Image (tube, rainbow, N blue to C red; front, top):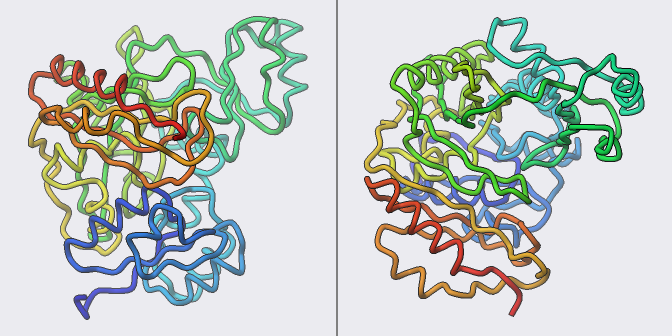
Length: 382
């Protein structure tokens, strides 16, 4: 361990924490984690895993008191404790004030409007009954997308209401309603900023979603867009992290509309599924970049070493229990395929259990290999 390095604590010990720990291991830098159980993915790769609840004030405060720098691998943490720790002089990235905005999708959308960042039109509602009444009266036209204001991620907390037959899908509680955007492509940009103000963006990626699970199924880097569209997407991402003034990473999810506009869907202030390919296909992984950014180290190169396709490895439908990876050896034979298993002990239908990045400058060949792995690596119970 380098004695001049500060003590870094991460709230959350899932797969993102595991990959952060692996990246830090190259520098022999210990990362401290707070999460409920040491058998979570990061627990096996850190000797400094503290069992506790990152949503609990006392657990977060006690953990943070021991750290020099505090960061996250999930947004839904106790920010009240983080505000107190900030008052006491702790360095917290992202800043808890900005985290409070991003955690609330209503406040997040209002932020974009306030700062002239492009996004879709929206309205805020206190409960689903008001939305139902406005739809039935015609005051609110179909189709709409409803998003709960808190706790939504990986497709949870989102409902698409296309007609009266879908009204039973309305989600309870405070939410925002936005136009159902006519989407040509779904894009994302991972952008990093350190305290010195240095900003670097990764190449734009294109996402294809699983039709049932509403999770990213394939991720293509680089995206199949024009150079002008790429420049616009990166410009928006950089402007967004500047406006939030966040140190660390910001994953900016974008829509390319049918009429050629690029608008912000939502953001995540951390490492993100849309950046997993960077481990194998870019000069600096998003995980190393987060560590560099929160420690105010020079940011690493975001240049691609190779084009790539990433596929999420999901738990097979119909299986819940101890995870068994069927077809592992067959998939190991695929040239250019890099398998990453997260170490979750229990598989469930469509649960993210790992990912595979196929590096190949022929993106069509890469996608065929990724599809082969998706079809032949079955994550089930034994």
